[in-house]
Length: 307
Image (cartoon, rainbow, N blue to C red; front, side):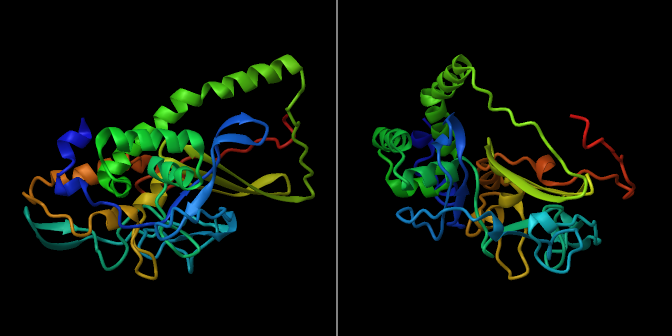
């Protein structure tokens, strides 16, 4: 229905101007077996899906309201607020305080993979697995394209990003019961897969985990020292997509998706909403919670040997 209604609508036939896509393993169906597979596509090259190297991830805050001297890997990341004032300028609603587009203008950091902006989310998961030739994904996508009469290039649009959310869900609905079957088989085998934690207070630990959340690639990074959490950072899907320009002037997926977009009425920018809504934003996820006066909210101390 959306393809019929919007198949010729200019505001949804663009909207994908960052052609790097990344996703990780998702929907466990057995030991080290997944329905969706990890990978990264660079420059829109679906024929060459690369393995993801977590140590190529960094966060830049050049145009974010944080202070850091250079891009940081999440294991060494900091979150130090540095808010800068708004500037007054003319808008379609008259003179108003607005963010300083030349300076810092966002509470979202700018994640980069090997220095490049990357889109994550259902579109990335579908493209990565389509490029990898995963049968369940290829069959579902090809059937959709045949039914709608859309070319493969239509996937790289706002319409395609919206369709990918449905296709991603459809693949899980059709084949997700494999996870249930695997869990049932594991229970019947009576084999334990639980590993009790064993922390040595004298040692330092580093670790991370990556999962495919509904909005895309989510990673958590932790460093433990002397039995305490020394550093903890989360790089969430909306941060990848909503981050501002980095120190090299490269824009993130949200900003890039709006380049060249024409508005029928600037006071009612429905075209912008169509594009940004296709990412399914969660700004609360991408921004660290803080008191509006900059005060500490709370502190927690847990016995590392409690388990």
